[in-house]
Image 1 (cartoon, rainbow, N blue to C red):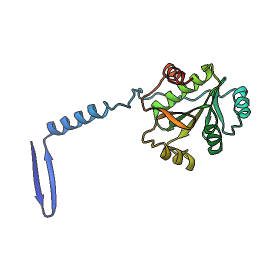
Image 2: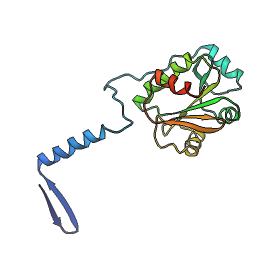
Image 3: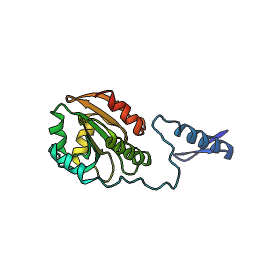
Length: 186
C-alpha cells in the first residue's frame, strides 16, 4: 500500500517495507533479464590479452596498418586508427569492428575470445579493428565511427564487406561464435 503525503509544495511517497522489497526484487530480476547481459562472477580478474607475437605486428605492417596489433595469424586484429580503417575499407577485405569498453567485464572476456579467434582464422581476407566505446580510452575517431554505424551499445560487433555493413550483433560471442559468423562471409 502506498500513501502520498503533501507538505507544502512537496509530495512524499510512503511505502511499507514489504512493498519496497518487492519493487527492488522485481527491478533486480528484470534488470538481469536484458538481452545483452552475461554472467560474470564477482571478483573475477580482468582478462588481459596475451602480448602479440612479433609476427602479428609484421603482418599488420605488411598490410600498411599502423595501429598496435592485438592478435592474428593470417588475418589481423588491431586497435582502430582512422587512416588504417579508411584504407582497409576501400579494399576487398572483410572488415570486422568490435566496439569494446574497458570497464565492461563481458567485453574483456569477449575481446580475448575474439583475439583467439583471429589467431585461429585460416583466411587472410579479414582485418579486425577494436574501437573503444564510451570509456576512458575513446578517441574522436572512435566516436565518429560509432556514430556513422549507429552504435548504441558496448560489445557491438559489425562486419562490413566492400564498405557496406553485412552483419551486426550485440550478443556476447565466444571464439566459436566469432569463427562461425566470420566464416559466413569468407
